[in-house]
Image 1 (spheres, rainbow, N blue to C red):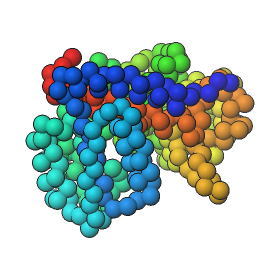
Image 2: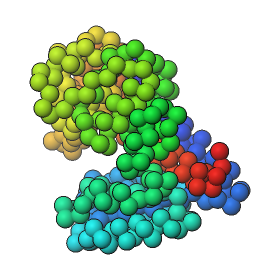
Image 3: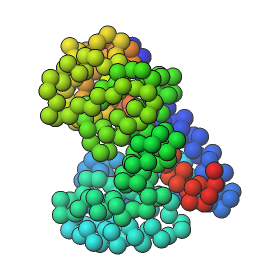
Image 4: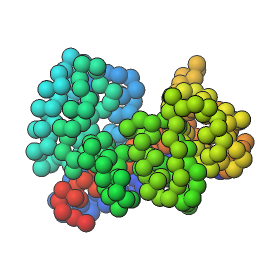
Length: 285
C-alpha cells in the first residue's frame, strides 16, 4: 500500500506557482484573489485561513470581504458585479456554505466566468463536458484529485471508477473529468441501491459524502485505489475521512490519508486557477 501524499504534491505545485507569480509580477501583473465570507461558520474560517496562507506562500494578493449573516442576495450580487469590473481582481470566490436566505445559484451566476476560480459557474462546468482541453477553470477538489493521480502516474484509462457522492462541487465534475480520461465511471449517491455491489467493482474508488466509516474493508476489492475526499471529525476532534482507513488500507494499492490527502490539493488548485485566470485576463498563454 502506498499513500497518495496530497501535502507533498500540493507543496511542489505551490513552489512552481510562486515562480510563475514572480514572473507575472515582472510584467506588472499581480494575481489577486478576493474571498467573500458571510457569517462566521467555523469550518469556513478554517478553510479561509488555509487559502490565505497559500496566497502568502505563492505571492498571490489576498482581499477578504466580510458580511453579516443578514446580508441579502442582492447585496452580494452587487458586490460581485463591482469586483467583476475591477482590473486588479483576477479571482472571485464566495466561501460556501452561506445562510439559507441567500439564493446560491444566483450568487454564483453573477461571477464573471473568467474570474470564477472555484469553477462553479455553469459556463466553466459546461465546458468540461467537451474534453480535457476545455477544463480551463475546473472545480478545485476534482482538479486536485486528477493532479494527484497524474503525479503518482496512475493512468485511469479503462479503469472502473466509482464515485460515491454526486454534488455539483465534487462528485459530478469528478465523474466528468475521469470520463474525459477514459475511465468507465459509475456515480453513486444517497438513493443508490446496494452501494457495496458498486464499490466492490471499483479499480478506483472516490468517496465524497461526509459520513465517517461509510466505506468498510468488505466493500472494496484487493488492489483498489482509494481517494477519500470526505471530511469528518472524530469524538476527540481529529479529522477523518469517509473510509475505515485502518482496515481499507490493508486491501488498497494506493490510498489518500485524511488529513493530508485531497484537502491540500484543493487549496493548491485554487491558487493554480487564480494564476491561470490572471494570465488569461491579461492574454498571456
